[in-house]
Length: 188
Image (tube, rainbow, N blue to C red):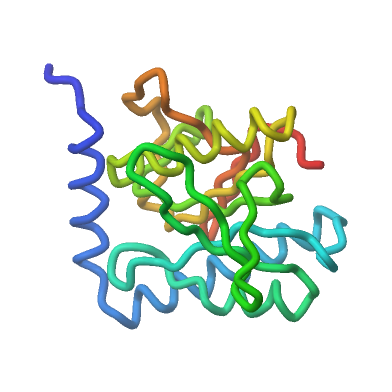
């Protein structure tokens, strides 16, 4: 039997997204945001002043997260969004209001996009360019500890098997979906 490749997983997940109506994507996204806020609330870490790496979703092939970012802002988190410096370097993160730039290692939390995730070990498959793999590796090296990295996904994006990976791939600390959560490292 042929082993699935990262592209096979990408194609499968993208087909699932394409099959969703706009209304269903919005509904599942809203449920994901609700679950994520509850997860954060259970963590007992105050958001005031917390530096959070956020991202802008692809409109039809990722959950819609603008209401999550708004909730985090309202609770005092400082949001930073990724800025591509070059194709071969980690992403920098820019504060949305001031434009102040930070390396990923200076963030407290990084919300990580992706297409497929493993419920076994936090493995992820992104869009194939390695931006977040380089960014997470750099953040972990800069900070001297694991950065709190959380993937936000719809249920069909999470697989109950290991994903095909290579040596540069970085896993996440937690995966949250509208109905499930998987935590792989202790949250600090």
